[in-house]
Length: 370
Image 1 (cartoon, rainbow, N blue to C red):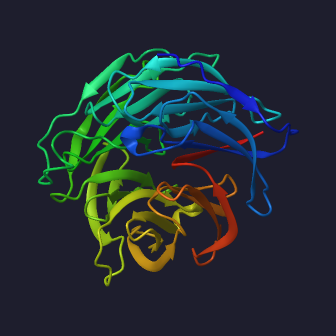
Image 2: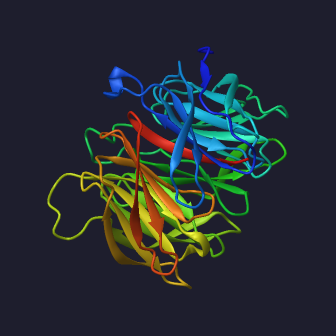
């Protein structure tokens, strides 16, 4: 399982910097031509990136996260059944592979660490399962200690909903619950999380049904209010939910399209991102190739459309903020670019900075502060 990744430092950098880590698809099965993880030093004033390292010999490092203490980076791998741990050098941002561990199911598409950085929860898309892996004190991963197969009925889409397809893992702000949107079953599953053992168990309301054929994909919480949002891949929509933080239950209150009303082409929604204080929500569109911008009601969290901004490329699978939230980045998977936008904190607007990073088949970005 360990692939013996090659790490080739290209630039040495002192501390006090921000580093960006871009993962990509690499296999012909994915119609991809990426080559691993690329590391960049970020200019905190302009948002520009400088390439400093390439970590090769990796298969589809398709989603990356950085530990809360900034010491480690973790990756799941599309179409594979393992996750990888890397050490992050505090001075240079360079990665060194530590180990790989079994995720208990094929095609891990997302992972999330618990608030104590002691356990990793993984969504296995092809296997239809959610798994828990311990994180050792030295940052290495241990093989999964729990794998839960999701139960339900497939949605009506004959191609995309033949079985369970959990696509995301997110902890609620308290760290007591875990959400797993299931694209195949049109459900958002909710689990209680035991911080001592790392084990998951169904919440009081084990799942919430989405609209038939909607394909819930990714979820995000309001930073301070009991509100969650879920972007629906197949319906190209976003749903606002009231969140019960005591029992771990969701109640849908609103659904809006992620597309302008005059768009007639094919589209799938992909990523969701929430601005600081929860004032704005952003969703990416693959087909319309845009970022939908919404303002939020300060009490209910319900959304109002602000508009759409082109991502200047094809199929933006991922969008996300840098640590300062002054910049938002879009990974255009099918046009091999990562595009930077400056965020207007007052209006939620996005303005291209002119910085376009050439990166083959990019699908994820994570940030670390040295």
